[in-house]
Image 1 (cartoon, rainbow, N blue to C red):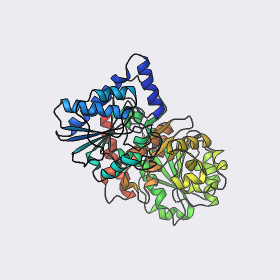
Image 2: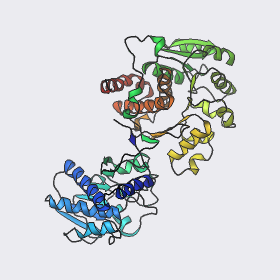
Image 3: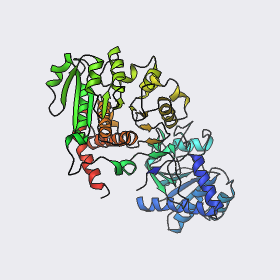
Image 4: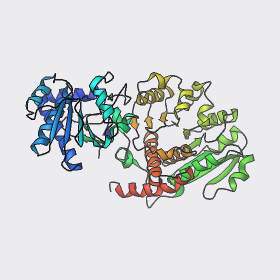
Length: 483
Protein backbone atom coordinates (compact mmCIF):
# COMPACT_ATOMS: atom_id res chain seq x y z
CA UNK A 1 0.00 0.00 0.00
CA UNK A 2 1.46 3.44 -0.88
CA UNK A 3 2.19 5.94 1.86
CA UNK A 4 -0.70 8.20 2.76
CA UNK A 5 0.19 11.59 1.34
CA UNK A 6 -0.75 14.83 3.05
CA UNK A 7 -1.30 17.84 0.81
CA UNK A 8 -1.75 21.54 1.39
CA UNK A 9 -4.90 23.40 0.40
CA UNK A 10 -3.10 24.83 -2.63
CA UNK A 11 -1.93 21.40 -3.76
CA UNK A 12 -5.44 19.95 -3.59
CA UNK A 13 -6.82 22.98 -5.43
CA UNK A 14 -4.21 22.44 -8.14
CA UNK A 15 -5.26 18.79 -8.44
CA UNK A 16 -8.88 19.93 -8.83
CA UNK A 17 -7.91 22.38 -11.56
CA UNK A 18 -5.87 19.74 -13.34
CA UNK A 19 -8.84 17.35 -13.34
CA UNK A 20 -11.11 20.05 -14.73
CA UNK A 21 -8.55 20.98 -17.40
CA UNK A 22 -8.33 17.29 -18.34
CA UNK A 23 -12.06 17.17 -19.01
CA UNK A 24 -13.85 16.44 -15.74
CA UNK A 25 -16.32 19.28 -15.03
CA UNK A 26 -16.21 20.89 -11.60
CA UNK A 27 -19.86 19.99 -11.14
CA UNK A 28 -18.97 16.31 -11.60
CA UNK A 29 -16.22 16.53 -8.96
CA UNK A 30 -18.78 18.13 -6.63
CA UNK A 31 -21.25 15.35 -7.35
CA UNK A 32 -18.59 12.73 -6.53
CA UNK A 33 -17.67 14.52 -3.30
CA UNK A 34 -21.29 14.71 -2.16
CA UNK A 35 -21.84 11.05 -3.03
CA UNK A 36 -18.79 10.08 -0.95
CA UNK A 37 -20.17 11.93 2.05
CA UNK A 38 -23.54 10.21 1.65
CA UNK A 39 -21.91 6.77 1.46
CA UNK A 40 -20.01 7.45 4.67
CA UNK A 41 -23.19 8.56 6.42
CA UNK A 42 -25.36 5.61 5.39
CA UNK A 43 -22.59 3.15 6.32
CA UNK A 44 -22.33 4.53 9.85
CA UNK A 45 -25.82 5.70 10.77
CA UNK A 46 -29.32 4.34 10.60
CA UNK A 47 -31.84 6.52 8.79
CA UNK A 48 -32.65 9.64 10.80
CA UNK A 49 -33.36 13.34 10.35
CA UNK A 50 -30.49 15.38 8.91
CA UNK A 51 -29.83 19.11 8.74
CA UNK A 52 -27.33 20.15 6.07
CA UNK A 53 -25.64 23.50 6.77
CA UNK A 54 -24.55 25.04 3.47
CA UNK A 55 -22.14 27.93 3.01
CA UNK A 56 -21.75 30.14 -0.08
CA UNK A 57 -18.79 28.40 -1.71
CA UNK A 58 -18.05 25.01 -3.20
CA UNK A 59 -18.10 23.43 0.26
CA UNK A 60 -21.73 24.52 0.42
CA UNK A 61 -22.23 23.11 -3.06
CA UNK A 62 -21.08 19.74 -1.77
CA UNK A 63 -23.70 20.13 0.95
CA UNK A 64 -26.52 20.63 -1.52
CA UNK A 65 -25.46 17.42 -3.29
CA UNK A 66 -25.43 15.57 0.02
CA UNK A 67 -28.92 16.82 0.85
CA UNK A 68 -30.34 15.80 -2.56
CA UNK A 69 -28.80 12.33 -2.52
CA UNK A 70 -29.89 11.61 1.07
CA UNK A 71 -33.41 12.74 0.24
CA UNK A 72 -33.43 10.43 -2.80
CA UNK A 73 -32.64 7.56 -0.43
CA UNK A 74 -35.65 8.42 1.70
CA UNK A 75 -33.88 10.25 4.54
CA UNK A 76 -35.68 13.23 6.07
CA UNK A 77 -33.45 16.19 5.14
CA UNK A 78 -33.54 19.93 5.69
CA UNK A 79 -31.13 22.50 4.25
CA UNK A 80 -30.06 25.67 6.03
CA UNK A 81 -28.22 28.18 3.84
CA UNK A 82 -25.79 30.47 5.62
CA UNK A 83 -25.71 32.63 2.46
CA UNK A 84 -26.75 32.22 -1.18
CA UNK A 85 -24.33 30.16 -3.30
CA UNK A 86 -21.69 32.26 -5.03
CA UNK A 87 -19.78 29.90 -7.32
CA UNK A 88 -21.18 28.52 -10.55
CA UNK A 89 -20.90 24.90 -9.43
CA UNK A 90 -22.49 25.65 -6.05
CA UNK A 91 -25.35 27.51 -7.76
CA UNK A 92 -25.95 24.53 -10.04
CA UNK A 93 -25.96 22.12 -7.09
CA UNK A 94 -28.35 24.35 -5.15
CA UNK A 95 -30.69 24.53 -8.15
CA UNK A 96 -31.03 20.73 -8.12
CA UNK A 97 -32.16 20.75 -4.46
CA UNK A 98 -35.95 20.75 -4.40
CA UNK A 99 -36.61 20.52 -0.68
CA UNK A 100 -36.72 24.19 0.22
CA UNK A 101 -34.76 25.97 2.96
CA UNK A 102 -35.10 26.26 6.73
CA UNK A 103 -34.06 29.45 8.50
CA UNK A 104 -30.45 29.13 9.55
CA UNK A 105 -31.13 30.15 13.15
CA UNK A 106 -34.28 28.00 13.59
CA UNK A 107 -34.29 25.55 16.55
CA UNK A 108 -32.06 22.52 16.00
CA UNK A 109 -34.27 19.44 15.92
CA UNK A 110 -32.40 17.12 13.54
CA UNK A 111 -30.41 14.14 14.83
CA UNK A 112 -27.50 14.55 12.39
CA UNK A 113 -25.84 17.71 11.08
CA UNK A 114 -23.76 17.94 7.92
CA UNK A 115 -21.34 20.84 8.19
CA UNK A 116 -20.78 22.21 4.68
CA UNK A 117 -20.38 25.87 5.59
CA UNK A 118 -16.69 26.51 4.96
CA UNK A 119 -13.88 24.37 3.55
CA UNK A 120 -10.17 24.19 4.24
CA UNK A 121 -9.39 27.46 2.47
CA UNK A 122 -11.11 29.69 5.04
CA UNK A 123 -8.62 32.40 5.99
CA UNK A 124 -10.62 34.41 8.52
CA UNK A 125 -12.37 33.65 11.80
CA UNK A 126 -16.00 32.57 11.61
CA UNK A 127 -18.50 35.05 12.99
CA UNK A 128 -22.21 35.78 13.04
CA UNK A 129 -24.60 32.88 12.48
CA UNK A 130 -21.79 30.45 11.60
CA UNK A 131 -20.09 31.08 14.93
CA UNK A 132 -23.42 30.85 16.73
CA UNK A 133 -24.26 27.45 15.29
CA UNK A 134 -20.77 26.18 16.15
CA UNK A 135 -21.53 27.03 19.77
CA UNK A 136 -24.98 25.41 19.57
CA UNK A 137 -23.50 22.15 18.25
CA UNK A 138 -20.53 22.08 20.62
CA UNK A 139 -22.13 19.61 23.03
CA UNK A 140 -22.94 16.99 20.36
CA UNK A 141 -19.87 16.51 18.13
CA UNK A 142 -20.75 12.87 17.43
CA UNK A 143 -23.83 14.10 15.56
CA UNK A 144 -21.77 16.33 13.25
CA UNK A 145 -20.35 15.22 9.89
CA UNK A 146 -17.90 17.72 8.39
CA UNK A 147 -17.31 18.06 4.67
CA UNK A 148 -13.59 18.48 3.97
CA UNK A 149 -12.78 20.05 7.36
CA UNK A 150 -14.90 21.28 10.25
CA UNK A 151 -15.88 24.85 9.46
CA UNK A 152 -13.51 27.37 11.01
CA UNK A 153 -10.49 25.06 10.79
CA UNK A 154 -7.75 26.34 8.43
CA UNK A 155 -6.64 23.46 6.27
CA UNK A 156 -2.94 24.23 6.29
CA UNK A 157 -2.41 24.70 10.03
CA UNK A 158 -5.13 22.94 12.02
CA UNK A 159 -5.18 25.94 14.38
CA UNK A 160 -8.57 27.71 14.54
CA UNK A 161 -8.49 31.49 14.50
CA UNK A 162 -11.85 31.72 16.22
CA UNK A 163 -15.03 29.64 16.63
CA UNK A 164 -14.87 26.19 15.05
CA UNK A 165 -17.19 23.25 14.50
CA UNK A 166 -16.25 20.05 16.30
CA UNK A 167 -17.10 16.94 14.31
CA UNK A 168 -17.31 13.24 15.04
CA UNK A 169 -16.69 12.36 11.38
CA UNK A 170 -14.91 14.27 8.62
CA UNK A 171 -14.91 13.28 4.97
CA UNK A 172 -12.17 14.87 2.91
CA UNK A 173 -11.19 14.23 -0.70
CA UNK A 174 -8.14 12.80 -2.42
CA UNK A 175 -5.74 13.29 0.54
CA UNK A 176 -5.60 14.59 4.06
CA UNK A 177 -4.48 18.12 4.74
CA UNK A 178 -2.29 19.32 7.63
CA UNK A 179 -5.44 20.25 9.58
CA UNK A 180 -6.44 16.59 9.70
CA UNK A 181 -3.19 15.47 11.36
CA UNK A 182 -1.93 18.41 13.44
CA UNK A 183 -3.35 19.34 16.81
CA UNK A 184 -5.77 20.79 17.69
CA UNK A 185 -7.29 20.19 14.25
CA UNK A 186 -6.86 16.43 14.45
CA UNK A 187 -8.96 16.28 17.62
CA UNK A 188 -11.67 18.49 16.08
CA UNK A 189 -12.13 16.27 13.02
CA UNK A 190 -13.10 13.03 14.73
CA UNK A 191 -12.74 10.06 12.40
CA UNK A 192 -11.29 11.17 9.07
CA UNK A 193 -12.21 9.41 5.83
CA UNK A 194 -10.31 10.18 2.62
CA UNK A 195 -12.61 9.69 -0.36
CA UNK A 196 -11.37 9.09 -3.89
CA UNK A 197 -13.11 11.45 -6.30
CA UNK A 198 -11.02 10.58 -9.33
CA UNK A 199 -8.19 13.10 -9.15
CA UNK A 200 -4.87 12.12 -10.68
CA UNK A 201 -2.26 10.61 -8.36
CA UNK A 202 -0.20 13.29 -6.66
CA UNK A 203 3.17 13.14 -5.02
CA UNK A 204 4.90 15.04 -2.26
CA UNK A 205 7.32 14.77 0.63
CA UNK A 206 4.75 15.00 3.44
CA UNK A 207 3.11 11.77 4.62
CA UNK A 208 1.04 10.39 7.45
CA UNK A 209 3.00 7.97 9.61
CA UNK A 210 2.02 4.33 9.49
CA UNK A 211 3.33 0.88 8.56
CA UNK A 212 2.50 1.42 4.90
CA UNK A 213 5.29 3.99 4.86
CA UNK A 214 8.15 1.93 6.37
CA UNK A 215 7.11 -1.71 6.88
CA UNK A 216 8.72 -2.91 3.65
CA UNK A 217 12.14 -1.90 5.03
CA UNK A 218 11.60 -3.11 8.60
CA UNK A 219 14.65 -5.15 9.75
CA UNK A 220 13.22 -8.60 10.43
CA UNK A 221 15.75 -11.33 11.25
CA UNK A 222 16.19 -14.32 8.96
CA UNK A 223 17.31 -17.89 9.53
CA UNK A 224 20.88 -16.73 8.92
CA UNK A 225 20.78 -13.92 11.49
CA UNK A 226 22.96 -13.86 14.59
CA UNK A 227 23.17 -11.30 17.36
CA UNK A 228 26.03 -9.29 15.86
CA UNK A 229 24.28 -9.19 12.51
CA UNK A 230 21.20 -7.71 14.18
CA UNK A 231 22.96 -4.53 15.19
CA UNK A 232 25.15 -3.19 17.97
CA UNK A 233 23.65 -0.41 20.05
CA UNK A 234 25.19 1.49 22.97
CA UNK A 235 23.42 3.73 25.45
CA UNK A 236 25.32 6.16 27.65
CA UNK A 237 24.34 6.15 31.33
CA UNK A 238 24.18 9.15 33.62
CA UNK A 239 25.92 9.43 36.97
CA UNK A 240 25.23 6.97 39.81
CA UNK A 241 22.11 8.77 41.02
CA UNK A 242 20.69 9.17 37.48
CA UNK A 243 20.90 5.76 35.81
CA UNK A 244 17.31 4.59 35.34
CA UNK A 245 16.55 6.54 32.16
CA UNK A 246 19.50 5.08 30.26
CA UNK A 247 18.58 1.57 31.37
CA UNK A 248 15.06 2.15 30.06
CA UNK A 249 16.49 3.17 26.70
CA UNK A 250 18.85 0.17 26.64
CA UNK A 251 16.13 -2.34 27.50
CA UNK A 252 13.90 -0.78 24.86
CA UNK A 253 16.61 -1.11 22.25
CA UNK A 254 17.08 -4.77 23.07
CA UNK A 255 13.33 -5.44 23.03
CA UNK A 256 12.91 -3.88 19.60
CA UNK A 257 15.46 -6.24 18.12
CA UNK A 258 19.02 -4.93 18.37
CA UNK A 259 21.24 -7.97 18.72
CA UNK A 260 23.73 -6.56 21.22
CA UNK A 261 22.95 -3.64 23.51
CA UNK A 262 25.59 -2.26 25.85
CA UNK A 263 25.16 0.32 28.57
CA UNK A 264 28.27 2.48 28.73
CA UNK A 265 28.48 3.68 32.31
CA UNK A 266 30.68 6.07 34.28
CA UNK A 267 32.77 3.88 36.56
CA UNK A 268 31.12 5.24 39.68
CA UNK A 269 27.73 4.05 38.40
CA UNK A 270 28.80 0.55 37.38
CA UNK A 271 27.62 -1.16 40.55
CA UNK A 272 24.25 0.56 40.45
CA UNK A 273 23.69 -0.41 36.83
CA UNK A 274 25.01 -3.94 37.29
CA UNK A 275 22.36 -4.65 39.89
CA UNK A 276 19.58 -3.92 37.40
CA UNK A 277 20.79 -5.45 34.13
CA UNK A 278 20.60 -8.92 32.65
CA UNK A 279 20.69 -9.25 28.85
CA UNK A 280 21.94 -5.68 28.44
CA UNK A 281 25.74 -5.67 28.64
CA UNK A 282 27.68 -3.19 30.77
CA UNK A 283 31.02 -1.46 30.28
CA UNK A 284 32.60 1.36 32.21
CA UNK A 285 34.43 4.51 31.15
CA UNK A 286 35.95 7.52 32.89
CA UNK A 287 36.94 9.84 30.04
CA UNK A 288 35.53 10.83 26.69
CA UNK A 289 38.48 9.10 25.04
CA UNK A 290 37.51 5.83 26.69
CA UNK A 291 33.89 6.37 25.63
CA UNK A 292 34.98 6.97 22.05
CA UNK A 293 37.01 3.77 22.06
CA UNK A 294 34.14 1.70 23.48
CA UNK A 295 31.76 3.02 20.82
CA UNK A 296 34.23 2.76 17.94
CA UNK A 297 32.63 -0.28 16.29
CA UNK A 298 28.94 0.12 17.11
CA UNK A 299 26.13 0.90 14.71
CA UNK A 300 24.14 3.38 16.79
CA UNK A 301 24.45 5.23 20.08
CA UNK A 302 21.86 6.84 22.35
CA UNK A 303 22.90 9.68 24.63
CA UNK A 304 20.89 12.11 26.71
CA UNK A 305 18.45 10.26 28.98
CA UNK A 306 19.34 11.54 32.48
CA UNK A 307 22.86 12.22 31.23
CA UNK A 308 23.05 15.51 33.12
CA UNK A 309 23.36 19.01 31.69
CA UNK A 310 27.09 19.07 32.29
CA UNK A 311 30.36 19.55 30.49
CA UNK A 312 30.83 15.78 30.63
CA UNK A 313 27.69 15.24 28.58
CA UNK A 314 28.78 17.81 26.02
CA UNK A 315 32.20 16.23 25.48
CA UNK A 316 30.66 12.75 25.44
CA UNK A 317 28.38 13.76 22.57
CA UNK A 318 31.37 15.12 20.67
CA UNK A 319 33.27 11.90 21.37
CA UNK A 320 30.44 9.74 20.03
CA UNK A 321 30.21 11.94 16.94
CA UNK A 322 33.81 11.03 16.10
CA UNK A 323 33.00 7.31 15.98
CA UNK A 324 30.82 7.24 12.88
CA UNK A 325 27.95 5.58 14.77
CA UNK A 326 24.50 7.00 14.07
CA UNK A 327 23.52 9.09 17.09
CA UNK A 328 20.17 9.45 18.82
CA UNK A 329 20.48 12.64 20.86
CA UNK A 330 17.82 13.18 23.49
CA UNK A 331 16.97 15.20 26.60
CA UNK A 332 20.06 16.49 28.47
CA UNK A 333 22.31 15.92 25.45
CA UNK A 334 20.15 18.46 23.60
CA UNK A 335 19.87 20.98 26.40
CA UNK A 336 23.62 21.03 27.05
CA UNK A 337 24.11 22.75 23.68
CA UNK A 338 21.58 25.51 24.35
CA UNK A 339 24.27 28.23 24.47
CA UNK A 340 25.90 27.14 21.22
CA UNK A 341 23.66 24.93 19.05
CA UNK A 342 26.05 25.31 16.14
CA UNK A 343 28.66 23.36 18.08
CA UNK A 344 26.29 20.41 17.96
CA UNK A 345 25.15 20.94 14.38
CA UNK A 346 28.77 21.05 13.19
CA UNK A 347 29.37 17.42 14.22
CA UNK A 348 26.05 15.89 13.17
CA UNK A 349 25.55 13.62 10.17
CA UNK A 350 22.37 13.23 8.15
CA UNK A 351 21.74 9.85 9.80
CA UNK A 352 21.77 11.30 13.33
CA UNK A 353 18.45 11.91 15.10
CA UNK A 354 17.51 14.71 17.48
CA UNK A 355 14.42 13.99 19.63
CA UNK A 356 13.37 17.25 21.33
CA UNK A 357 10.11 18.07 23.04
CA UNK A 358 8.97 21.66 22.31
CA UNK A 359 11.02 23.17 25.16
CA UNK A 360 14.20 21.43 24.04
CA UNK A 361 13.41 22.34 20.44
CA UNK A 362 13.34 26.01 21.43
CA UNK A 363 16.77 25.67 23.06
CA UNK A 364 18.35 24.37 19.88
CA UNK A 365 16.25 26.31 17.37
CA UNK A 366 15.24 29.55 19.10
CA UNK A 367 12.19 31.20 17.55
CA UNK A 368 11.72 28.59 14.81
CA UNK A 369 8.58 27.05 16.28
CA UNK A 370 7.04 30.43 17.10
CA UNK A 371 7.83 31.86 13.68
CA UNK A 372 6.52 28.88 11.73
CA UNK A 373 2.86 28.57 10.70
CA UNK A 374 2.73 25.04 12.12
CA UNK A 375 4.91 22.22 13.45
CA UNK A 376 5.54 20.67 10.04
CA UNK A 377 7.29 23.78 8.78
CA UNK A 378 9.17 24.18 12.07
CA UNK A 379 10.51 20.63 12.04
CA UNK A 380 11.46 20.86 8.37
CA UNK A 381 13.38 24.10 8.97
CA UNK A 382 15.13 22.61 11.99
CA UNK A 383 16.19 19.47 10.14
CA UNK A 384 17.68 21.54 7.35
CA UNK A 385 19.48 23.79 9.84
CA UNK A 386 20.90 20.86 11.83
CA UNK A 387 21.44 18.67 8.75
CA UNK A 388 20.03 15.77 10.76
CA UNK A 389 16.72 14.05 11.44
CA UNK A 390 14.52 16.02 13.85
CA UNK A 391 11.71 14.31 15.75
CA UNK A 392 9.57 17.01 17.37
CA UNK A 393 7.64 15.28 20.12
CA UNK A 394 4.00 15.88 20.98
CA UNK A 395 0.55 14.45 20.55
CA UNK A 396 1.17 15.11 16.84
CA UNK A 397 4.84 14.11 16.67
CA UNK A 398 6.51 15.39 13.49
CA UNK A 399 9.59 13.73 12.02
CA UNK A 400 11.60 15.70 9.45
CA UNK A 401 14.67 14.90 7.34
CA UNK A 402 17.19 17.42 5.98
CA UNK A 403 16.10 16.63 2.42
CA UNK A 404 12.59 17.94 3.12
CA UNK A 405 10.75 14.70 3.84
CA UNK A 406 8.28 14.99 6.71
CA UNK A 407 6.10 12.41 8.43
CA UNK A 408 3.35 13.21 10.94
CA UNK A 409 2.36 10.72 13.63
CA UNK A 410 -1.41 10.61 14.16
CA UNK A 411 -1.67 7.73 16.64
CA UNK A 412 -0.27 9.71 19.56
CA UNK A 413 -1.49 8.35 22.89
CA UNK A 414 -2.29 10.46 25.99
CA UNK A 415 -0.91 7.61 28.11
CA UNK A 416 2.59 8.54 26.94
CA UNK A 417 2.46 11.63 29.15
CA UNK A 418 4.51 9.89 31.82
CA UNK A 419 8.13 10.14 32.97
CA UNK A 420 10.53 8.00 30.98
CA UNK A 421 8.43 7.45 27.87
CA UNK A 422 10.83 9.58 25.82
CA UNK A 423 13.75 7.45 26.99
CA UNK A 424 11.98 4.38 25.64
CA UNK A 425 11.40 6.11 22.32
CA UNK A 426 15.10 6.96 22.06
CA UNK A 427 15.96 3.30 22.63
CA UNK A 428 13.44 2.19 20.01
CA UNK A 429 14.92 4.57 17.42
CA UNK A 430 18.49 3.58 18.20
CA UNK A 431 17.60 -0.10 17.93
CA UNK A 432 16.05 0.18 14.48
CA UNK A 433 18.95 2.27 13.18
CA UNK A 434 21.43 -0.26 14.60
CA UNK A 435 19.61 -3.00 12.71
CA UNK A 436 20.17 -1.17 9.45
CA UNK A 437 16.98 0.80 8.98
CA UNK A 438 17.43 4.22 7.38
CA UNK A 439 17.34 6.82 10.17
CA UNK A 440 14.28 8.76 8.98
CA UNK A 441 12.21 5.63 8.54
CA UNK A 442 13.54 4.25 11.83
CA UNK A 443 12.39 7.36 13.69
CA UNK A 444 8.98 7.13 12.03
CA UNK A 445 8.58 3.42 12.80
CA UNK A 446 9.73 3.85 16.40
CA UNK A 447 7.30 6.72 17.03
CA UNK A 448 4.38 4.71 15.65
CA UNK A 449 5.25 1.54 17.60
CA UNK A 450 5.78 3.61 20.76
CA UNK A 451 2.29 5.11 20.53
CA UNK A 452 0.65 1.81 19.61
CA UNK A 453 2.24 0.14 22.62
CA UNK A 454 0.97 2.87 24.92
CA UNK A 455 -2.53 2.61 23.51
CA UNK A 456 -2.47 -1.16 23.93
CA UNK A 457 -1.93 -0.69 27.67
CA UNK A 458 -4.03 2.40 28.26
CA UNK A 459 -4.70 3.75 31.77
CA UNK A 460 -2.03 3.17 34.36
CA UNK A 461 0.82 2.99 31.86
CA UNK A 462 4.33 3.68 33.11
CA UNK A 463 7.42 3.89 30.95
CA UNK A 464 8.66 0.58 32.36
CA UNK A 465 5.64 -1.11 30.74
CA UNK A 466 6.43 0.02 27.21
CA UNK A 467 9.30 -2.33 26.26
CA UNK A 468 7.24 -5.35 27.28
CA UNK A 469 4.29 -4.18 25.20
CA UNK A 470 6.33 -3.78 22.03
CA UNK A 471 6.37 -7.50 21.07
CA UNK A 472 2.59 -7.53 20.57
CA UNK A 473 2.92 -4.66 18.14
CA UNK A 474 5.89 -6.28 16.42
CA UNK A 475 3.96 -9.53 15.96
CA UNK A 476 1.07 -7.66 14.39
CA UNK A 477 3.50 -5.97 12.00
CA UNK A 478 5.29 -9.24 11.25
CA UNK A 479 2.04 -10.98 10.38
CA UNK A 480 1.00 -8.07 8.18
CA UNK A 481 4.20 -7.81 6.15
CA UNK A 482 4.26 -8.56 2.44
CA UNK A 483 5.69 -12.03 1.93
